[in-house]
Image (cartoon, rainbow, N blue to C red; front, top):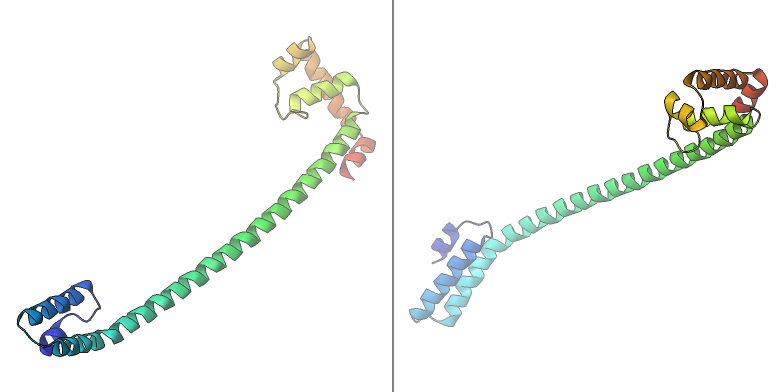
Length: 167
């Protein structure tokens, strides 16, 4: 009996346990004593327990390693997220400052020049309009829009206005 059990695969598999249970059933049918059956079952379990323990140790080690990796990844994601949020907030703050300065400088040119630049470069809503669209909205010609745009840009390039933008 013990030789048969020892020949079974020692991987702690369900098949091995099933074979032990079948052997127990056969012994009961043959009228062998409960004590003999129990002793053989204990011996079979003693043979397989070290294997199960080593498998469990391996599983625990892999689980600990995987858990450590998951935690490191989570920490890295948190740190990267924090860095990205800080950078975005800084960019937004700089963008607001530039936008405020631009509005200040645009107040120094005429209303019509300001409107042409606002529409052509999408300064208010981010939508850039073509010369034709601007001309239609302001009810004038494309040539006149080009002229107004060139004049406005020339004014904005003036050193006094440029200094306000660069500060």
